[in-house]
Image (tube, rainbow, N blue to C red; front, side, top):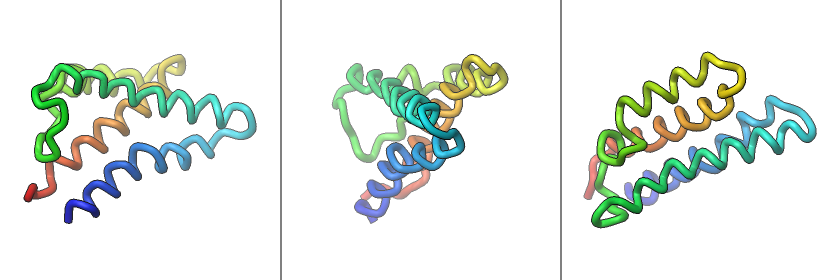
Length: 106
């Protein structure tokens, strides 16, 4: 079960954004993909946790950039063209991290 959970988690983080970015063509594809990958920086807040990594911990509501007020801000970013791609990446990131909360642990 843990290998399935891990595979889905990292697949959503690193593979699914490719399919989102494919919506754009040429150089725009790379720009969108790199923006989506840059939204992984939201995980820097994991450095504040002790222990830093806990495979059984639900990130949503625990880490500062994974709280509900932050998630609302990420959703609001979807409504503005200048922040939409960042919002897509951050919302996708929260959905990905959120699915870890639903899996039984050990």
